Image 1: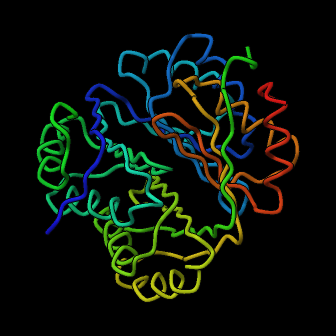
Image 2: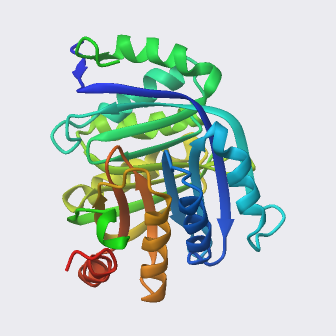
Length: 157
Length: 154
C-alpha cells in the first residue's frame, strides 16, 4: 500500500500535560497572562466548550516548568476536582501536506499508533499539523511506528 | 505587546462541527477517523480531549457538503465505539491566528475577547504555527473583527 508522504515528523519527550475545567472561559485569561509573565511556553493546547458553558482545556508545558505552572494554577479559584496533571508525557507530530488536499492521514497516524498499543492521551489536528500527546515512555516506540507508516524525507524525523 | 504577538488570521467557513462524547477507548477514535477516511471525508479539524474519568471527547469539523454522510457514519458506529451522544454543533467556521510562537497569553486573549462579546468558543487547538478557534458561522466575521482589533491587525 502506498504510504502518505509527510514533510517532517516532530517529537518532544519532556512535557507535562495539564487539564483544567472552568465555568467561565475568561477566568483563564489570568492564568495565561501569568504563565506568559513567567516565560512559560504552551507546547500544545486543545479546548472545547460543553453545552452548559463549561470549558475543558488541556495543554502541555515543558516538564521543567510544571512546578511553576502548578503553583500558578493553585492561585486560581478552581474547584477541587478541576485540575488533572500527567507529569511525564511526550509528543509526536506530523507536518504536511495540507489535510484538505490529502484525506486520511490522521486516520493512518491514529490507527498505526493505537493499534500497536500506544496510548494516545490527546490530539490536535488543524490545517497541516497533527500533534499526538502520548506517555513519554512511548515516544521512541511511536517514532519507529511513524517511520513505517509514512514516507518521511531523510533527516526529517 | 499585543501588536507584536501575531501576524495574521486565516478564515475558513462552510464547515460543520460534531461533538462525540464519552468515547471509552482511544482505539475507538482511530475507528472513527478510519471510517471517515474510507468514505473520503476530509476532516478539517480534530480535537481529542481526555477526561479525568478516562473517557474521551472528540470534536471534529468537516466540509458542509459532507455533513449528511458524516452524521450517518457516526451514528452507524456510535454503539460500537460506546460513545455517549453525537451532537451536531451546527454551521461553524475556523479562525486561525498565526504565528503563536507558543505564547501562553494568546489563548487567554482569544478567550477573553470572545467571552466579552458573548461569542461561544466551541473548540480551540494549537498547531505548529497557529492557534485555531471553532466559532459559530454567523459570528465569524464579528469574531474576526474583534480579534483583529485585539491583536492590532486592523
